[in-house]
Length: 81
Image (tube, rainbow, N blue to C red; front, side):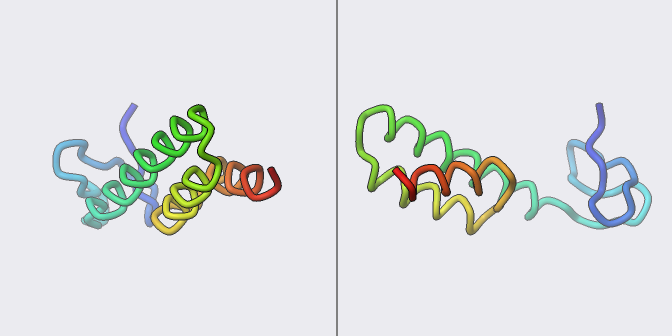
């Protein structure tokens, strides 16, 4: 399934991250989401090792890159633990 442009909902070329309809370059958006995902993965691993403070920090950093539903709720869970 092809990715969709957040501006016009057109299909985005997976190789160039450029919308075929409006020409928007979504490369930085994809990079930010990728960085957020890597930080969340690290936070979950850190939490599994028992370091709650570091997991909180990593999740807060992830939210700066991409504050989606999962990250918001993970952040809330960690801050109330």
